[in-house]
Image (tube, rainbow, N blue to C red; front, side, top):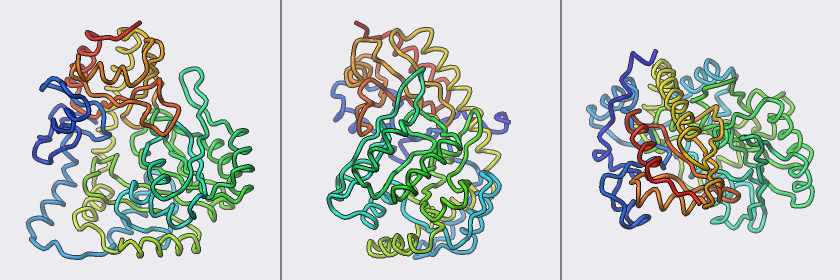
Length: 396
């Protein structure tokens, strides 16, 4: 399938002023980085978008009118059909609310359902905006550290139960598949989480934005939980990771409970989140209606890049231990065996190898011994990054 599209071709990231490739940003973080650096950090792919998405955006651009729009029938139909076809979920139109990206939506959720000094529970390490949004809205973060054993993560449900009983969090925000690590939570794990939330009267919010690139096994959406749990559920997602549309700042929530939905929508209105991005809406529709073949092809390509990277790390990178990844395109690597922490490894690779990787200490908590990589680029660049890092290892 991958032969239908050429993922060895890279988009010109200067045209869109991509943050991950911006030398001023790189030099501000890692002064003295070589000018020929290669970024393996921000979760952004370097491939041109799916042809159907590009065609849709060209049509909107050439039409010449970029005024206020709305979440119209075409948007709702695309989402409903995608969730049914791709994830086996029967989503009702009323459940869907379009917003301006999952990251900003974390802020609105905390504002809607938390008061100052309330708390939320996060499985750490986890995508930092989960914690940033809480802290900047006066909400405490309670870390539920993931258990690292045999190169994988599991959730400590006994600890989670105890924390909910003592801390009385308003929200448990679960990342599924998990970022970082690309861990797909099983149906039984989702049920355990939902049961604890129901027992302790904690709102279960599940971020499923990384659900479109799955290499092994089956992703189970929280919307496929037993019906008794759906009244206490908010699901956040978008095509932004699957189709690389993050710059269009478009996402949506699916909320079965009408009262939870009403409270959330009221908060969006208070923040003037009422009219979608005209390009973003067109891109979602095109991606969901016409982009599935491209998505399958890019997932196949990313999977092969990941497998090659994993083999390289095991064979050539002393003290690095890669976590088997079943989803996403962002490998998570334990570097504790090098005798250095993630910050030291990250700075060293930037300065000496010219490879920009992500420091695991940025992931709220418990990530200090890990780095995150990114294979969302033409494979020859992945290979170049690996060779550079192997030639500039920091061990002992």
